[in-house]
Image (cartoon, rainbow, N blue to C red; front, side):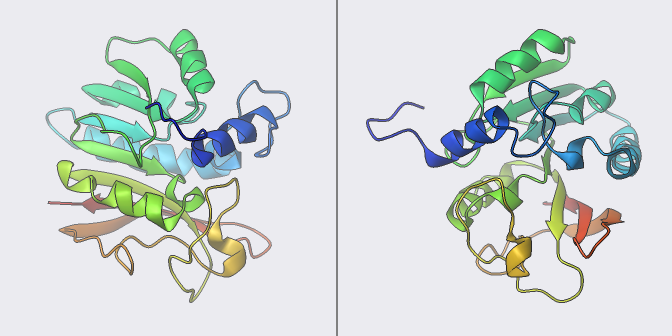
Length: 218
């Protein structure tokens, strides 16, 4: 993962977000934002995602791409054969390794747009792509054919919006541009077998909605 060029902007940006608590949580060592901690958001998410995982006779191997502070994943790994949690921030991954331990749990520090991703049946991408540039998302989309299922969560505007306006990798998302990530639209054009919305949480004060979709890729 080393390079002769300056450190990757995305890695730097995410490291700074946690160090400066740009997503809140001043009393936490690492805090992945309200989308990973607010009870009214995460409770229904746990219910629908754990329900999906438990619906399989043979437990799935799951790869969580952008696991953050693991406040979400810690409630899900027990329903999997193996849970592989990935994040770009090395200090965060090292902290997670110290705190969360189980025989079916692994943590890896990877840049999901650049590095080879772990093998799994299902990937989880919870409010990750919304922070990335279109070029990074394109790179990730090319790797999705290696998986059967994807549990995708994105923060989207209410009503009609223009999907996939570009941005640099940062703490912010496309909402201020009246945009959000839609992998089925240009320029990503992801081909899928089926999509099913599992959960839709509408935020107050016209702050959009958080939508979780199960996507069967093949």
